[in-house]
Image (cartoon, rainbow, N blue to C red; front, side):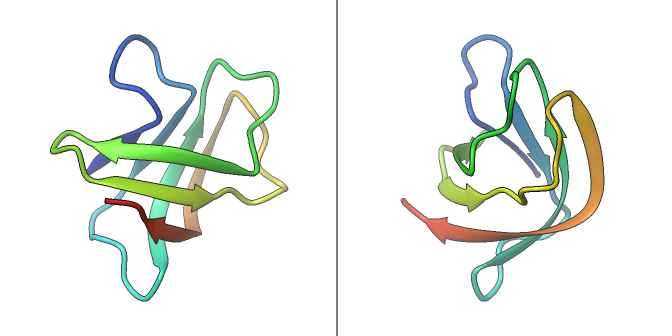
Length: 77
């Protein structure tokens, strides 16, 4: 599943997952795009409109591809 911080235009944060969130965690590939720095949290949605708030790790750089990251999430819708 693909999650993005925006579906209008180019996203800043993209999260790719194989499974849904479980027990407040999401195993993911995280892409940081077009941002000078990544925010501490990001609001992301999937193509169906399901929304999550994810807490991004501090050691992730902008303009990077990060595999096998476990994100802490809050379901917002």
